[in-house]
Length: 219
Image 1 (tube, rainbow, N blue to C red):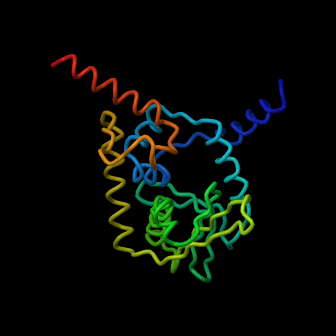
Image 2: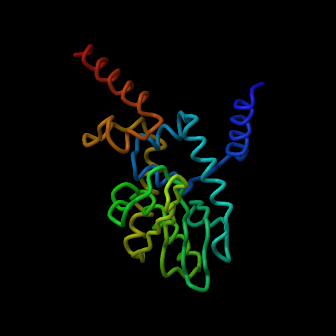
Image 3: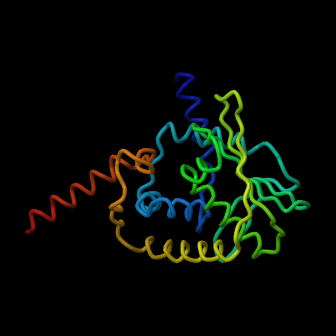
């Protein structure tokens, strides 16, 4: 066996050794990006090699401790979240992200990484509801290929907004799990985000074209 194949096997073993059960915050985040991606993840999961490497790099980044509470689980209302870091004295919730594109400013974060903001809002709500004090939330972006490899995005979540987001996504999660595959949103394009970064893009648009052709035959 070649060393490269052995490396890939070890990466897969590290990432896939634990079977995940229940509803996770990452599921709700995927749902906020695209209901169709969420459906594929649950019914016909597929991970390409590039995605595996990014996940593995991110896992190594998460090993670095930044708070007095690190890599711990929080559960609320049957949803499971795994928090990167939390500083209990300052009330700061920290999520670390290994990215290929380092955002230049806050506007870049809000445009390209809005789903990560969604993730922190969900964590924030779950922590508040389970008795933690959270004043601020921080996204720490890392790109080792940049001369200045770090970018921080700090904000104060709104409790009401976070609560509404949590409840609406959870309700939508349960409905889609028991339904047929959702339609592709009319505003989406296979050449733009989020489709351009999605491992399901070829299958997704092929299925959609097949359904259209089948319906045309029935007319």
